Length: 267
Image (cartoon, rainbow, N blue to C red; front, side, top):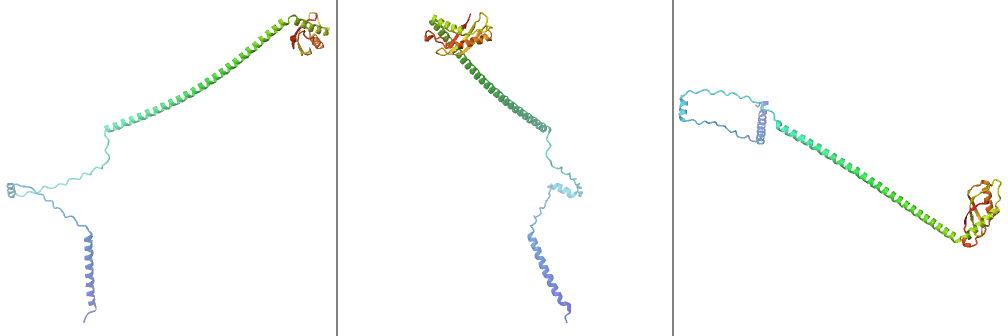
């Protein structure tokens, strides 16, 4: 008769067998995935010994091997940049000093060039200003010279015209001669007859009369020049000239003059 727990035994063994197979598969797969280890190299130390020495060593008792004293490990110093030598420091300082001197020299040269350019610009402006002032002075001098020349020419023309008029008057007077003097005497006599002597008139009166007439003897203007009489005498003589108008005609029409200068002496 079979017991109740006997059917579990085959089942357990089957499970154990399957687990062992699964473990074997996993282990093989892990071995396949892991790279193979390199084969270790065996170091063999050998010493060449003479046969006689070997026989002596076989006869001599063995000696104890010397004790190996471990060598203390010296900690490695940390690696860093190499420290410059004094010569390198001196060389660097010299180069730095030379660079500073070169920079200072370049700055000085630039400043000198800028100052030279500024001075040149100032000089150019001064030269232009002097040139403009010189041109203005030359133009003013030329204008003044032209004005003076024109004035001199005008004065010369006026002097020449006055000289011509004087020469013409002298020539006319010389040509007229006694006829002109007789005509002026007739005019003076007619003015004297028309003069009404004022009470303030004194003997010895002399007055210069500037008389303007038109052809036919009509008087248009009378101006009293130098005169030794008072205002009443001047007014009376001026009125006498207008009363004597028209003045006597000249004996020759060529002797007629529009402007007459008469020396009036009534006494």
